[in-house]
Image (tube, rainbow, N blue to C red; front, top):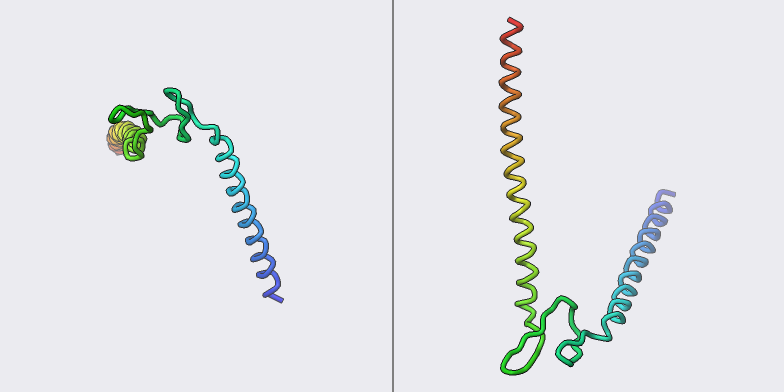
Amino acid sequence: MKKLPNLIVGLAMMSVLSGVVCMSVFAEERKSDETSEGIKKYGIVYNMAEDREVIRIGGKYEPEGVDIYMKRHFDKVHASIEQLTEKMNALEVKINDMSDKLTDVSRQLKLLDK
């Protein structure tokens, strides 16, 4: 009898997983339909991301390389991480100061009790 609940749980997990896979497939299909019109820049329709730039190389306009496009996005992420690191360091200094003050107060209270 213990195998039956395990079987039901397994079937339920498989049905949930298949639903997630189907939803992601439909989402990708819808996304490709939305971008099928493309982006018109300099009189030419390009099928690319909206934030990707069109640059002039050798007298021709073409989308920037994927390496340049991704570098721009990674630079933004890196800058955000740097800002968060600075904020975390400032918080760490404040926490250390508060901890020192608490230690001092605790020491003074012990002296008063004596």
